[in-house]
Image (cartoon, rainbow, N blue to C red; front, side, top):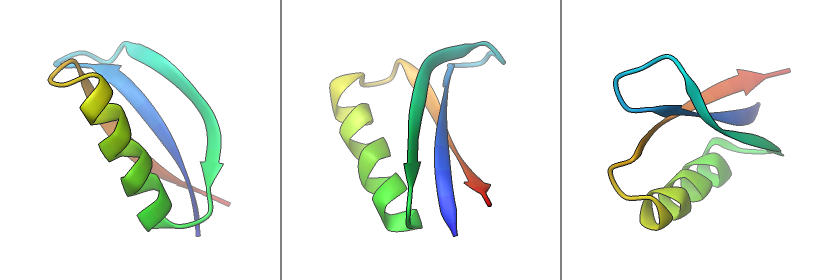
Length: 52
């Protein structure tokens, strides 16, 4: 299954960053989220969404 990442401001429904990449595996999406967390610590919430 493929995944997209949505990035929101903490405690809101407003999207903060737009990530256009589609990741082939859950592991690849998790790795991308960890990289973003290291660049922007405690600023955003990350959500993985499955896509078809």
